[in-house]
Image (cartoon, rainbow, N blue to C red; front, side, top):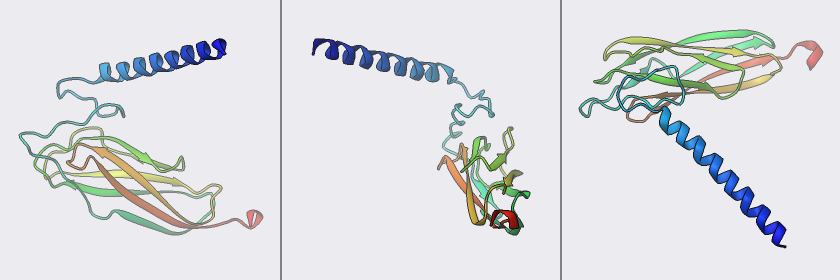
Length: 160
């Protein structure tokens, strides 16, 4: 029983020690000034300027590709505008799966300026109605925005 207890304590200490080191590394990576690298997903977003935030406003938040063939690779550019009162910085954009790949601007978007977020979708191995999302991490008051794509995928005759 003592061996089991010792093993448990050693394992617990090891897990706690490595977890703390990873947290410490993340903390050390964060800069205290506003010179933030936009293409690093672990980087925090810019703080509001004098209580003013940017606002990410899309022309539309969902795009329907309609009916496409299985294996098609399609893209769409979501147009947006910074309708807020401070520079908009998108620090990350992630698709809900590997078949959905977003590309976003890495430089700040000034108030009143427009931008585009390109989303590519690979329908290989998929069939029927598919809806995918992209989560955008940015320095708005809400910190996140979600846009969606959908497509009805016709399976090839050999995969039906």
